[in-house]
Amino acid sequence: MAKKKRQSEGAKKPSLKMLEKKFRKRGFKCRRIYAYDSVVVFFDLGNLIVYVPSDIEISCSRSTFPVMQIDPSELTEKDEGFFEQGDRMLARNPIAGDVCLLHKHYIYAVGRRRKWKKIKAHKLGVRIAVDLPLFLIEPVFYKKNRISEVHLQCVLGIPVPQTLKIRKQQYENYIDGVLTEMHKISQTLQLEIDEIEELRLEAREHLKLVSVDIEIAHAVAMCEKRIRKCTIDQQQAKNLLKESVANMAAFALEAESAAHTLASCSTDVARASATLTELQ
Image (cartoon, rainbow, N blue to C red; front, side, top):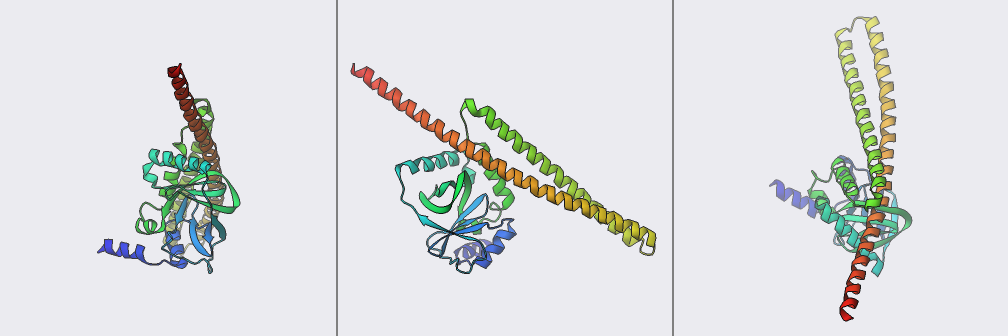
């Protein structure tokens, strides 16, 4: 019965209002909508791009999200390199399901072999991708924390040549440092929240003692001040993590692509040399 309910939910024509609730419930914030002829093509949820299939038409005319116009673009021989790189990434991380590569003014939907042009330029990067129906019926996997983890695994798993491994390790060490700091901030935040709960419990036990009540109120105010500072520090750490992962992705993707091209050329050169040797 539950399975039928989930299937029927995925089959319905979703509204923007309903999707906004779904995104928020799973921890995502829709940064923007990519649309073509006022019809939604992608939802940009940060590390996740939700692709709307052509048989599901969602108008963005009443969208509360920022809307960016995109246009389908003709594929060139050079574009195949992006799709092949996406395929190699999925072979290393099959749990990701699908990915989109972003480069300059283009979005490459690897699974669908589609290329879209947008106005705003973007550095070389990768996003986890999923079709909207699958997103709707898989609430456990497609949550912000889970997708952030899978996205980070994809980026860290991109191989680079031996000569660049030291630089990649520097990126990884920096990311580890930011993650460690975020964990410390979260622990401190939870301690402050727990202390406030204890103070309020103590206040309820001493309702008639004004002096105790004043002391507790002051202690709670100090805890709340520290919580506000932790919240600011937490947001700054999140921004640092986002920037560092994006920088590492751009570096690793470019290095992996160049190394693959070089290896392919070397193989072709060796094969051609062997053929010439045989002909002598």
